[in-house]
Length: 227
Length: 139
Image 1: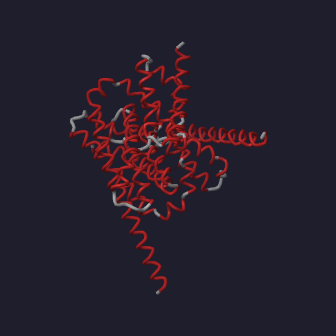
Image 2: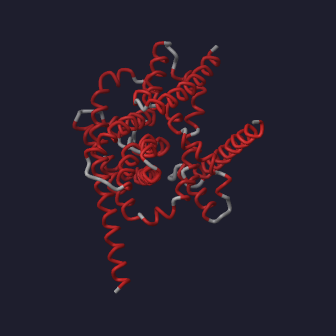
Image 3: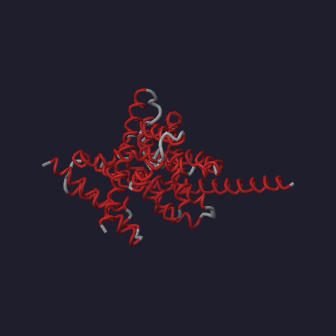
């Protein structure tokens, strides 16, 4: 019975995702954005159905598992775009080197200012990088990976919505800056948004996201010592 | 019609095999990272191995391209199960949820502002350098 329920959770999660994706593409209404609509519906279902989290995760953990191969898959766009990386090495590395400390320090300091516990401050620190990187960085910083994963997704949703607004108000014109804004602030969700703007924006966003992720993971011991 | 669906089937099968290949690379990287370099996460190590293989032309791009594209296109799906973990912390999100959201929104705005301004300035600097180089070339 429990196994059947676990399987039903997996099927439902994938089906809702597929449906949300189609509706979002057709209507452009951000309420249908897969990263917003599906978690809300699934969480509602799990809470109302009194489904224990370990039952939900029993089969859906395969979806999370695919984040590993997805990280490896980033090698392909990086390789394909090596010319562009070389061409814009300066601005891209400046962007990453500035974005990463701003993301980590502003998260920690704001959390401290709002009186959130030290554990929450540390779990919030790596929230702006892609999940696989964040999960690798969280324990080294002293955060709870489970919480960090949730904060990463909330960041993604906020980033997609805020990105649209910020792009209107910020005085930046280059495709490079627009892509970097979305990739640095909102990892995979931002990259998806950047791909909607254009191919170059998408590539820059994924690059910024990856480089930022790698940099944060390697800097994690330093961050742990600092916060 | 049949030939069209055969092509589509072959394409999906190729994508599936490539996803399996990328998963194997990840598993290998996982082993290596555990055994030799625990400081480097498996995903990052796997990506570096993959880049090396592509750069040294040990691995043709066509062997992993469609699999990689699929994994990256559906990445949002892989995030979803992790979000459901919030149900494990009902008190936390009831008592601190608003503050957490505020931290994330404000920090995201800061990151966006700073990053885009820096990259835009860097981009203009790159153009200026290129222009100057061209002028010197003419002289």
